[in-house]
Amino acid sequence: MAAMAAGQAFMQSEQQRAHKQAQAGAAENNAIAMRQQADVERQKGEAATRRHDMDRDKISRDYQARAGAKRSLLASGNVDVASGSAADSLLGNAALYGEDLAANRHKRALAAWQADENARQARRQADAYAAQASWLNTSAGNIGDSLLSAGLAGAGSLAGSYLRNF
Image 1 (cartoon, rainbow, N blue to C red):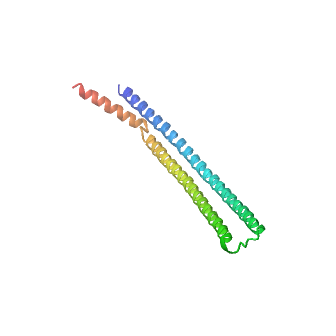
Image 2 (cartoon, rainbow, N blue to C red):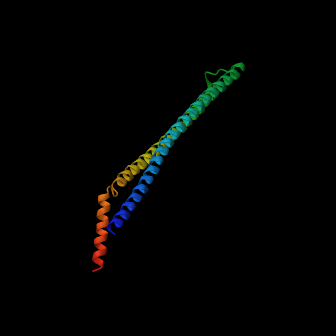
Image 3 (cartoon, helix red, strand yellow):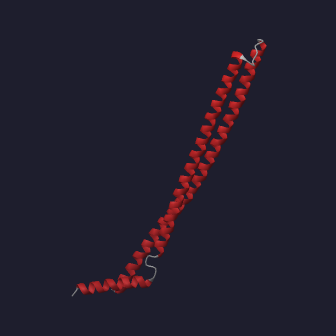
């Protein structure tokens, strides 16, 4: 009877160990997936930054083309572009250009910050999964780690059933 109780206790501890090890494996896989997600978020941020840089370059090219066309138009009409309303119109275009560049810089910084935060969150989640896996592996190693603990559990069960009979 004691041997049977010891065998049952040992099998139960082995089942618990296997369950915790399976949970640890899932947590480790989740940690790997979240680290990969962090890399994807970082790459998305780099791509967004490159897009904003290309937009900035387009804004500059467009401004230079418009300013050149306006100067040519004014000069062809014998208008002095160094003073008066002609100069004001060129300065107005420069101010609009500056605003467009500032908006572009803001969008670029925001996209980079957002991608960085997403990557940081994914890394934190990966660390949490890794810690969970470590704890599960450690606790799985402490469950019924020998036949002695199973034997003691069986002896305790036998003693309990013996004492209940009296």
